[in-house]
Each structure stands twice: as C-alpha cells, then as structure tokens.
Image (cartoon, rainbow over all chains, first blue to last red; front, side, top):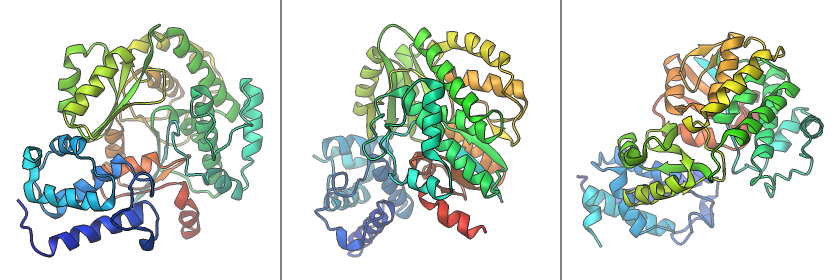
Length: 101
Length: 305
C-alpha cells in the first residue's frame, strides 16, 4: 500500500492535469477541477485506464483493474476533480476500495 | 531500429484533419472517392469528415478506411519512406496489401466488395455484431463466455485488457452485462452488424479463397507483411490470398502482432490511415517504441528528410 503524504494529492493532481493536457491537446488554462472529461475535453474510458496504469506503476499499487472497475461503475468520475478524488481513494485503499460506499 | 507501417480498420472517430493532410502531399483524395464510386457503384463523394455521415454504413466505411490507407501509402512511397514490416488491424488488411504492392487500387476495392457480399450471404439470419470489452483480463473473458463459448468468439485480443467479441446479439448482450458486473470499465456493442473474425462466418472462406485464387491481379508482397492472425511474415502471393480470406473469419491478436514486430527491433510504427485508434491501443502494449499517426506525420516526414 502506498504511503499517503501531504504531497501525494499535489502529485496526483499534477500528473492528472499533465496527462489531459498532453492527451487531449488542450491548454492548461482550459482545465480546472470542474472540467467534464468526456463532454469538455473529449476524453474516454481508455484514458482512465491509462491513468490507472500510470498510478499503479508510480505508487506500486496492488490493484486489479476489474476491482477498480466495479467501484467506477458505482461511482463514475465525470470531472477532473472527481477523478483526482477517486485516484486518492485508489492509492489509499487499493483493492479494498470496493468495500467503500 | 526498424519501422513498421500499420493500417487501422473502421474509423469510428476521425481526427478531422485527415483529408487536408493527405491533400497537402498532393494525393488526389477526391479523385480516389470518385474512382471508388465508379468502381463499386456506391456514391462515396458525399462523404463529409466533419459529420462522419457514413458511420452507420459499414461497406462505405470500409471503402473510406481503404481510401485513407491507400492515400497514406501513396505519401510514404512518394517520400520514399519504406517499411521494414507492414501489418494491419482487422479490415485494415486491404490497404496494407495495396501498400505492399499486392494489387492496385481498383482490385482492392473489388476485394472489399466481394468480402462484404459473402459475409452478407453467409452471416446468420439473427442480428449479429461485435462487442468491445475493456478492463478485464483474458482469463476473465474466457470465464464469462465459457457457458456459450461455441456461440461467441474472441474476435480480437487487442491488448492486455481490451477485447472484441463477435457473435449474435442475443449472446453478446448478456455477456456485456456480465462483463460490467465483473468490473469492465467499458462494455458495449460496436456499430457493426457483421460478426467479423468469428467461426460462424466460416462458410465465407471457401467461396472467398476460390475467387481470390482466380484473381490474377494479386501478386507477391514487396515488403514483409506480418499476419495479425498467425504472427508470421508473408510475401508469397497464395499465402497473401489465404490471409485475406482467413482475415474475415479468423480471430486476430493485435497485441501479439505488435509484440512480434517489437521483438524484431521495430521501434517506430506509422499508423497509415485515418483516426488514432492504433496509437491509443499502443499505449497498453509494453515496449520501447513510438506510434506516429496522421496528426504527427508532417513532423515525422520533415524530421526524416
């Protein structure tokens, strides 16, 4: 399990923002925590999958994609802010995220 | 360091700039549309990339995929950027083999038309299609389809967590629900009514190969073509013909195809067609390589001057 520090959220936020800036070819000024990933910047579920893989490697997470998927189906992240919150939960709880409600 | 030219299949989502890019290299794209319309008897000249107005028309979409692929092929030849390997994803095979010099533009169109007619002839009477499932492993997929494994095929093992299934809708729909319940991040039907890469189309093969064997316009490949079904290199004209026929009915494994080329020291892949689907899929394939799609082709060609 990854150790959550005060800086973890900043790291996650920076990674997520940089990811969408590059993938969706948008200017940093066009993004904020309320940006809708699909509607506003033309994102897709594959991007989410890619981000999960990035964080899996970065924080050496022991997670199964389908376990995360079960949580995502119940708690879809539509905005960048929601995605950052969800990522923090994944880092903190790993596969036990499905037990959260 | 080797380069492979890879050809995508149906384009569900265009970048929007494809036509402008190929025209900027002198490709007569509208001329191709006109010629294809005359040869196939299907008017393709009304195609509008902005609205993707042929999205629901499978045969027209295949022709357009082919035309964009041939256009990029022309650019590569024009710029003398020749590949060490060529491969193709699903119905991208037709443009890939045009690129390999196996036939001319018109012959390729006729092959597409023939394949489509045979699939129409032999597909089951019940509604069929293909489903995309993302986020589950191969083991999960096999477990989910096990109760009806003879009725549904894994048409494409795209990457570690991405699959296309082929079959009748009555069998695919419950699988989609089961996949979602199992944690798939995406499970949905594709906008196609043909169950490609599935044994249920096996009757297509014998008719198709007989037609292809009689087609004298198909010749040996000038570049090593990597089969997405068997992961070997083909150049012989009869093996190429067999590959075209099998491609309709046989499962493909894109990840294994990419792995094959990566192991052969391919570090640069050029996505020779519209959209960026192969670029996106490539992100989930391990290896030290880059995929350049049409969006970045200008800087690639400029850098290589």
